[in-house]
Image 1 (cartoon, rainbow, N blue to C red):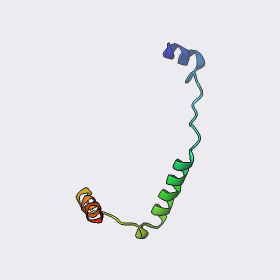
Image 2: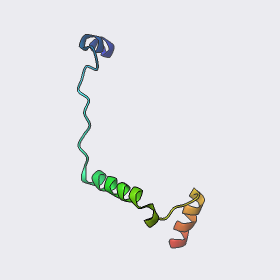
Image 3: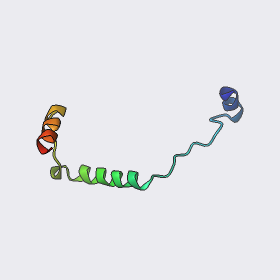
Image 4: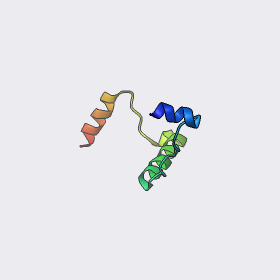
Length: 59
């Protein structure tokens, strides 16, 4: 049924849209941009194991 509709419409037979971003997503994207622009302000880990060790030490 989809293929018949696609052929009849000469493309995808429905609108393709994305939902607007919610506040949490917008905030996360802004944080990502900040981290990307200033990586020196954030911890970095060589491996997942070193990340886990750091978390265990802080707990």
